[in-house]
Image (cartoon, rainbow, N blue to C red; front, top):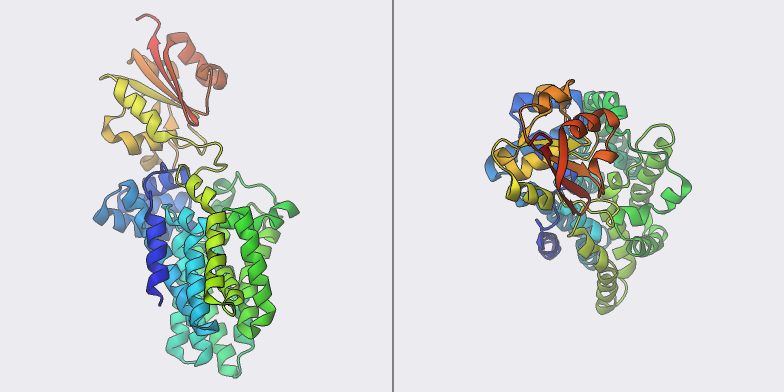
Length: 464
């Protein structure tokens, strides 16, 4: 029975898998995973250590599958399909076969499943491992043997390596362990979690030292953000509200495991909100791993209904999420009303560039990753980065260093491309004076294009 939700998830996620351009986080994945292994390890020591295990996994994958958009996103699509299949198995063991099937199908049609199943980031993998860990927990509590607890500890360890915050899952799991009928369940459960946590300490310490730089864009959440979490995580407010409403009914009606799953959904969200008051951490997508458990509870509410009624409600949830399903296949940027079309911008450059052209990016030091996008889509055919002093690989970073004497660095070129973030009527006027003045003194804008979220200008030297 698990096969059908898994195939349905893979089918839905695979639709237009490569239509949306790679967005900034995915460009970071490509930049990291495509580096030689020693350089990748140096990068992890500088920034984004918490995603380091995922980058190492993708490094091996890209060596086999290449780095096309489909190749970058395919592991996430497969992980989501696996998560749907395991959700079905877990639901069948906890609440019956019908509940398992409905849970898997409900998970398959959610916008969040497609959104993160089409993204080259570790959230889909973390979702798969969260369901696997819960399934293994259920087996270990049912019959407490050391091999089963070791398997559970391995799954929790893998979960932490995929998404360190996802280890908060064990806050809900603790309820199942503490209510074990025998003391060995509690002791072995505690040792399993302790072992996984101990092995994750070095990653947590390194990640904490990098947090201020990596999450400097994250603000402090308010109660409105907390109330909006279901919609933010599921990627559709109405669908998130429906899912939470159905799940809440089952928490009280489904006994011990209903409470366990309810806490597994609730506690990580509360922990993220509380932690976000003191440190930059409140990013709703970090909670994606709880979605299968909300689906399980919702399915437990639907299972007593006639099969046609339960499937109809699943279908309604899918229809309510259809607009977001369409939107996320156009862009992965947020908000979706502000998409960024990197491929369109680089196509303009590719169509009009000449040998000897240079290129400048504005900005260079933010999260726009304009240089990474140009490197990905144009490869070695891109114009020369005339202001480059030290590239990302040499710096062991996601950002390059520019030369401190721009007038001298600009001297060898007569034609210069300027790729700017946002739709700019005058790209030079939008730049800081320190960067714009050398360009304005030596060049004039010859041609100007705007695409979604970006501006492309061709500058020519005034003497020419």
